[in-house]
Image (cartoon, rainbow, N blue to C red):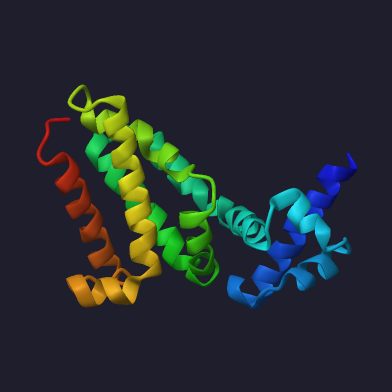
Length: 189
């Protein structure tokens, strides 16, 4: 199908440019369409904006590492530890791809589809059991994801405020342990 081909050409072109530049902020819409050999209007037609296209391309580049997250979700560890493992692995991936992911955070927070909380919602529900309603579990999932995105995006301000350097793996892991303890305390699994 022609439309799928054009959409894929745009994603592939954006991925190529991202791989070459290692910075999502330096790529222009014109560079993408020139690489894809399509009309500039196609970005808005298929994605709504250049930021949405770049966000999709970053997601594709990170997909291989996302298999780690699937393995964690499928693991047989206690619910609270599974959630912590998932969040720390997700943060490791985000930091490893920081040059690509950081410029996309404002789009994700302000305009993108709110889909990341759905990835952790089953784990949240497992941690909560019957102690939280469906709505409360969804709110917790949303709070954890958006907080994580904002902390990553405003890492220097977060460091000034809390003394926690999210670029340091141990401090970042400790932050997720603290967050989960705030939400779930010492509930039995």
